[in-house]
Image (cartoon, rainbow, N blue to C red):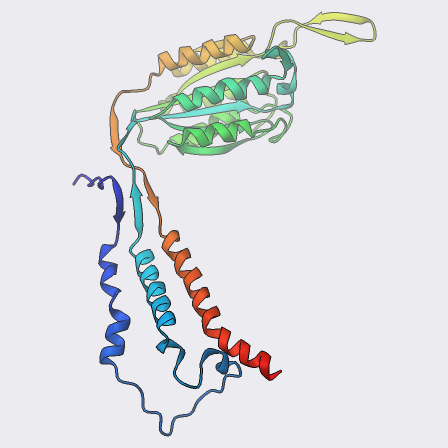
Length: 340
C-alpha cells in the first residue's frame, strides 16, 4: 500500500490527543474531594507561600487561567504539531556508489594549483570530489578513507551533503602514512556485498602504490569482480615539479611511485576504467566523465519535508507554569519579608 503524503501546511499528527483537553474539568466535576477527618498530612514549611488565609491558590482567577493554559500547551505539544512543506522530488537510481580516497602521507605533496595557489593533492580532491558527491542526488553514496589501513567514514546514504562535508573534514595521515589499496577495495566489497542495489560502483583515488595492508590489490579485485562491483580508478599527481635543495632548483617527478599498471588492471578486471589526473582541471574533467559513465537516473519519488513543532507549545507551557508559580508565591514572599 502506498504511503499517504500529508497535506501541506500546519497539521497535528496525533489530533486525537486533543480529547484530553477537558480532563481537568471532568476530574474536578466528577471526582469528589477526599475526606479530611483522620487523615495524616505532610507538613511543608513553605506552604504558606503557596496559599493565603481566604482560599486555595487555584481559586484565584489569574492562576486558574494560567493553569488552564499550561494544560492546553501540554496537550497541544502531545498532539505533535507539524509543518508539512511543499512536495519535493527525489531522484532514485538504485545505485550504490562508494568513494575510496587516499589520505596517506604522500597526498600532502604540493604539486597542484587551486585558485592560483599551490596546494596539496588532498585539497584538490576535497574540492572536486566533494562537488561530484553533491551531484549524485538519487545515489546512495558512501566514503572510505585509507592510508596504512582503511575505514568507513560514511556508510551508504542518500545524504550526499553530509558525505561531502565529512570528506572535507578528512586529514592527511589520519589512517596512517602508508597506502593500503587492497584493504580499501576489500572493505568496499564487504560493505556492498549484502546490498540489493542494481548497480554497485567504487571510485578509488590514490597517488601511490600498495605499501601496506593485509590484502593485495589484485587479490581484492578478484573478490570485487565476483561480487559484480565495478571499480573506476584515478591516479592523481603531477608529472613535473620544481623543488629547491642544497644544489639549487631541479625538476623532479612527484608521481614516480604511482602504480598505474595495477590501477589499470583493477579497472579492467571489474569493467571500470582508469583515469590520470595531473592537475585540478584534469581531475574535474574525470569526474564529469564519471557522471556520463554512471548517469543519475530520472526516476523520482515524491516526498514532503516535515518539521516537528512540539517544542513551541512545550516551551510556552513551561514559561506559563513558571509565571504561575511566581505569581502564587508572591503574597507569601511579601508576608515573609514583612514578618522578618
